[in-house]
Length: 113
Image (cartoon, rainbow, N blue to C red; front, side):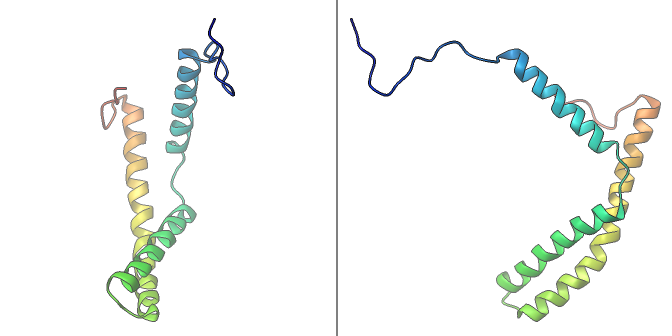
């Protein structure tokens, strides 16, 4: 008779399975749909633009050897450009999605898998 190796346990039955994965996939799809159905906001555009401007300022300072003051000035300039660009891009995508839903057509085919 073989003895189990010390510190190991048998694997036992699998918990979950296909039903759990399908439920998780369904919940993720619902969360995605809910998120995409919310109209864009200036606050969301500001948050996204601030993050991108910060990354831009750091890259300008580190990659191009500019002073931190120059990086901050360029980041501020980019922030002013990024805010409306981000908002209007989001609004365009949101409106396109809503038009597609109202006519029953989708702007892109559903993904497989």
